[in-house]
Structure formats: structure tokens, C-alpha cells
Image (cartoon, rainbow, N blue to C red; front, top):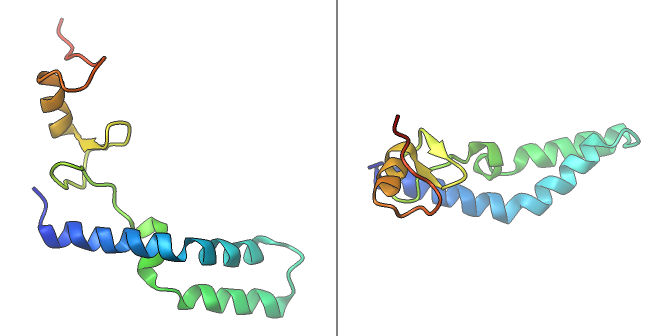
Length: 101
């Protein structure tokens, strides 16, 4: 199981991403628009740089909802490969069976 501090840090990042999502997308639209003047471009670029670093969605980490494991994460199920295998073995995930041949 992952350290509690790491899981909590990721939760704080999720909150910051949600809080600044609209502001960040507005600034990025200004930057992507080819008709933007140089002054507006640099002002938007400066404002984007002044936003908190952890408000960027790329700093989020997909984590297992059960253990908090950060690696081998399956998006479809929201858990890591280890927990996925256990859940499948116990029959907790409908429509999925363990392969055998």
C-alpha cells in the first residue's frame, strides 16, 4: 500500500486542477489563437506561469482506488493489476474471468 502522504498529496493536486481548470483553459485558448497580439500572448503566458504548479493536470497520478498503488493502473477498472487479479478471482467484476488453457 502506498504511503498515506503520497495519496493525500495527489488528492490536493486533484482539487487544485479542478479549481484552476477554467482559468487555465481560457489562458491556453489565448495562446493557441494565431490572431492574438504579442502583448496579449505574453500577458497570458505570464499569467499561466504564475498559476500553481500543481494545478497542471499532467502532475496528477492515476492511483489504485483500493491500495493507492501508482503503477500498473487499469483505467477501465480504476485499480492496479494486483487488485484487479484478486477481484477477478473472487468474481467481484462481472463479465471477466481468469484465463486458463
